[in-house]
Image (cartoon, rainbow, N blue to C red; front, side, top):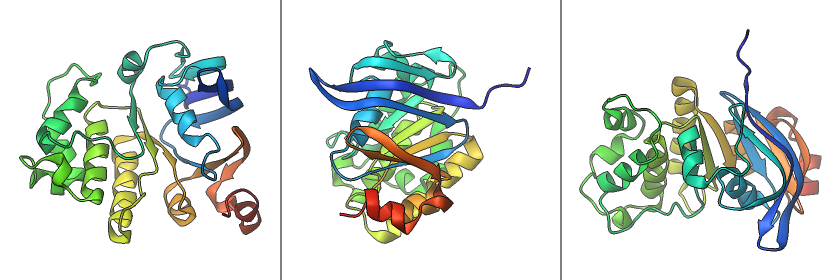
Length: 238
């Protein structure tokens, strides 16, 4: 029997903060090996959707299926063992820990019990980090911190990486570098990537498919080549 390409499947997911709903009946699918982008204006629920997938926000209704397992009620720490890596907005590295120690934090969620030098593999994607292993994470530039955050996620040997606004506050040259690296990670390691992003050009260059959110619901989706000016103006223009 041919293995299913479906990796992540959300059906009628309603979620929020306490008794305040933010997501309303969200349904979406993501396939293995894809790069997808979640677009929308500020405050429409994009971050809440990522947090719900990783288990930081309780799902009040609906189901989340990951790798054919229902993880709707699975605790966050167990979801990382399924192979879900979450890189939040603001990166959330530990500023007083060294780059090396920040990277080692990702190993706590590593789902692969085989012994291997995963650090050398990480350095192939982020050679800059090897030069700063003893430096405190908080002393890195914003772009370097973002690379560290992605690398820390890779340390867990994920099936999917969820990134929230990876280009926020980063200079254009580093944005281009992050785009290239994410494509390499996707192509060379087969890791699925889901990105929340505000920069339309970055999204179109990086992702194969897009989802557009408004008021806690997904109102448009398709191939990024179909992301028309009219759709951008309707849902994404500030």
